[in-house]
Amino acid sequence: MSWPAVGLLLLTVLLPLKGAFADTYARETSMEWEPIPDATSYDIEIKSTIGGEEKPQVISKITETKKDIKLPPGNYLVRIRSRDRRNVAGTWSAPIVFPVGLDPVKMKSPTTNQIISASEPELQEISFEWEDVGGADEYHFELTDEDGAIVTNEKLQKNKFQIKLPVAKKFKWKINAYTTSGLHGDENTSGQLTLLGPKLERPKIKAPDNEWVRELTWENPQRAKQIEYILSRYDPKTKKYLLIDKKQDPQQQLLPFQKNWPGGRYRFLVRATSPLRVTSDTAKIEFQVRGGDRSPASENIATVRKSIDRTNGWFLIASYLVTYMQYENSFTETGSNGTSINVNVVGGTGRLGAGYLAAGSPWGFLGIIDYSGFLLDSKKYTFASTEFSGIYRTTSGERGEIRQIFGLYTKEIPMLLGTTNSFTGAEKITSLGPHYGAEYWYALSPTIGFKTHGHAYYSLLKRSTPNGGAIVPSLSWELGILGSMRLSKKATGLMGYVYKKDSASYKSASGFNNSVGIAGHYLNFFLEYPL
Image 1: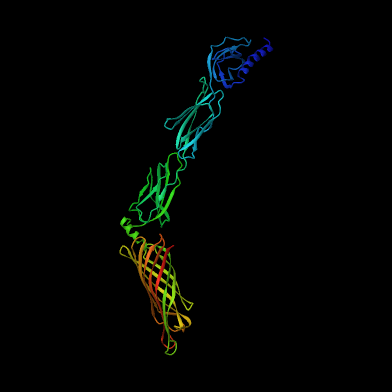
Image 2: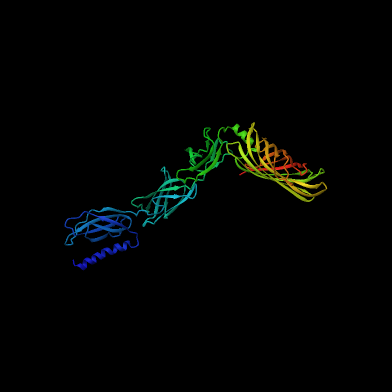
């Protein structure tokens, strides 16, 4: 046989094969066989098992013992024969069944072992999508949960599938391509999907109402499976928080506060966890715990005393007294004939002060500035005073408290000149001396109480007098009773009655005593506010 004839024969054989598969998906397949002695080439005959009038396809002149060829999915009968160096063909081998399955499914999403963060707390829609498989008529998709229970088993004509899945779970999926005749991929494409739940809400801690802490409570968020908490106490020596208690517990919402835990400043941290959900942010509070007895009886007494208790540390006070005053003086500067004035005037006193009470100590101090004035014949007369005092507090019974106040003061008092009907001017007497006061506070309820007080100011030293004469010792004093109300956790307001008399006296040039007295029944307003 001449070479052109051989070439024509080969062309005649290959062209039908190309034509038969031109419009059909063909899959790359590989055939391999044992070598035959003295063979220089091989012929392969491929025939569909379906039968019909279609002629077998033959590939000739294969010089190796293997051949890669593209075939549409299906079952084929394949046989082979050899040719020697003369190109003489041997006998065909017995046909064998050669299956050509579908390509495996190539997933677009999700990936084989993907972890997806869900945006919904309970159900999240998940999309499965894959590339079309050539020759496939449908896809068999199966989804199971982590226990192996079937979630869904679908036969799909499209290359995508959507389903809502419960959050915080793991799933396994597998998929294969099929033809209507039952052909399928050589193996399933499979993978695992983890659906991670969104972050849990932060637990809500209930802050203790007061320092008598006997338990800590909080509210767990939905879907939390476990609570982790840390309780620590601030150590003033090391300036660090030291661990008191730490625990992981399913769904705990109450921590009994042990009696043997000391008082002081505490910090409490709580967070919620759940498998396959993002751990919550940490909830945090800091609170003060009373040392010693934290029993309900002790708390009840302390609660009632709140209407009179002062918070330790710095505090401010503001007060105003308003009334009609009775002003009287006697003035004899030279000779033996003097003058006197006795009038009723409208006046008031404003007071501002700041103090400090040491924590864990009965001691403190207080500084006050007074500014007083009255109107007489449409003219205003003003005078000021200052005082700096120590404070010592003692408990009186379960509801009472005694406060002793002692220190130094300086006070101005105006000396009106002239007579009751004719005023020619005014000068000031300024004296310095010791001050002592006592206050009794009593709590009627956690918000209502009262106080009584008495203060004495003894003019002893001269700072200034109208004529430069020496101060004659004199006593100024006041008495009062006021009701108190706890306006807030910090502010305490008082209102009540005060009788106050300011006195001053000094030597005149003729040896007589020039004296002044200002007395009044006052309506007193008072506010105390800790910083």
